[in-house]
Image (cartoon, rainbow, N blue to C red; front, side, top):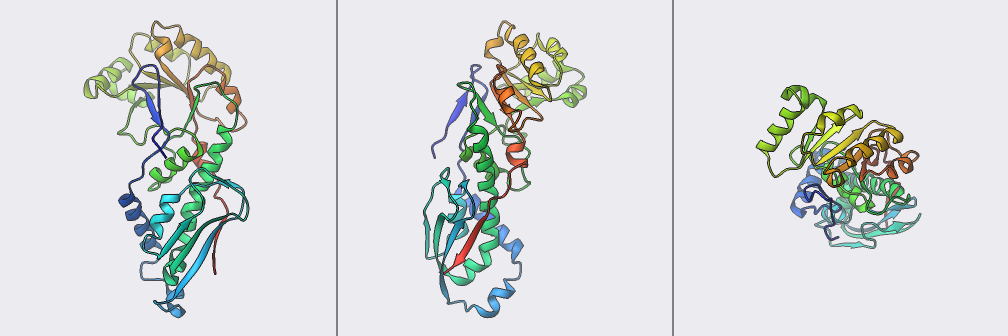
Length: 297
């Protein structure tokens, strides 16, 4: 999938919709997962499956979903004789759809089965959940963002699944962007100090401010901020903040997002408040694993 970048008017705030996952990195991760699951081998499989035995298997969808994880699947079975992928990332699949055919070492297929399914079920679950939000009507140019609320060790994979589902990725980590929050302001001795320190230390990095009330916008008028994150506000409060920010001399170029408590039911109300985006932790935290199975033939 080609890289899709959303660039906002400041020319500083941008978000990517497709992460390029390095093949060597994926392989190193799945090998670590296999080692965790079978640190001293698979006692059951090795008891009665000879190392020379060859088998074929299908990976099958147990429910309607959006598929994500083609590269993960390839690297999980990188040493099999044959891995035939029958779907692509982003494809909608129905119950009973065969996602892939496998052919090779019976021991490897059986030993890796649970780890492979765990990963694919998680990624497909996230992509499917994201697609539910994407399908809800929203203003042209409006985007949905994920958050850093991901499973430790799986962030790259989970954010990839978010992108497959059609949403954009917020900052990958704390090294990717500057988002000033209330505790940062206290630590810096005030908002002006926090912004000045951030600009002087990382002049090429956009600076965004998180606020939870309209009163905090007044304090930020004299500061050249690239964006605001409106946290835990209801739609009416968000709309009032948007109107105030847009009234600034440079207000039309400021990126505005809302976050906190946004779900499938409340999403439509927020989408039409004039903000540029919503960032939703529930894209990952509320995603349910999709039912998949591996059948040996």
